[in-house]
Length: 216
Image 1 (cartoon, rainbow, N blue to C red):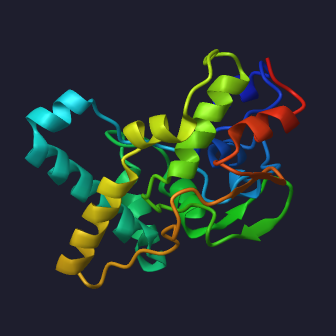
Image 2 (cartoon, helix red, strand yellow):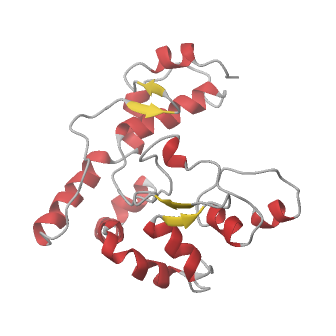
């Protein structure tokens, strides 16, 4: 993406970091808006596996999930951000300059327009996959024609997004390591979301779809 921006093959892009900050670092682009300004705490990277793998390898699944939860809990702490930047920079990981990753993770960064911005929560590692996120993804699939029939969005989301199981693992980890704390765990199964200035009610997907102006 950065190479295509440099070659003027694209005018811009919406992408995960480090590609946005790298464009600034290379002097070929600027940051117009952070994705958190579109949807705060939006989902991004996903750890997924098949039901068969979980059934056949339950201990491995728990170990993998717990390792991810532990790593994200450590990465969420501000005092660990600079260390994580150094750990992820080498070629066998992100292959990026440490400075770029430090700017992203600490939230102190140049925006390419002559400003130094301070957004400490620019990157969040909250690992909880909420049912509202799952329903929203399914709603977009319906919106753009990948799902054509009437479905029970909430029921399908429960089968795919393992919120209850993940929360149980988070509680177990916290019991073993009291220094780990989780913030902003939903107190209800389907909390409403604020996305691009609109309220998304995951219990009324059809109402949401009826109100969007652009769809297939």
